[in-house]
Image (cartoon, rainbow, N blue to C red; front, side, top):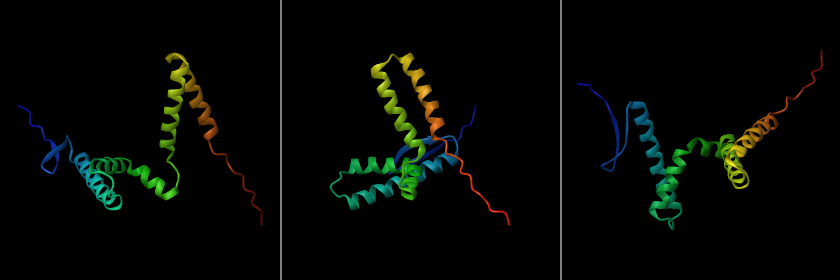
Length: 130
């Protein structure tokens, strides 16, 4: 007989998720706390939002906290979000105009071309010798 330890995250008397280790369970619980805080904040500042919309937005903000923090710090989208959006647009456009085999080849070539153009140029700085 095997003994198995499971960590269950419970919210408002309802099991939300089950994990094999405590670290993952604690991380999920912390994310749910953050989602609740976002939901409460949204309902206070946007009373016309219904509860389901506020909860969905709160959960989205909590799940994407790294991207939200990056946007708040820099006022720009994170690179990972930009790449995902670009890939989705390219996939949709290529699916409409090409077969699946041709679209895979073009997506790979476009991705490699974009990778080459996204590399930052090295700046050369002149230093005056004393």
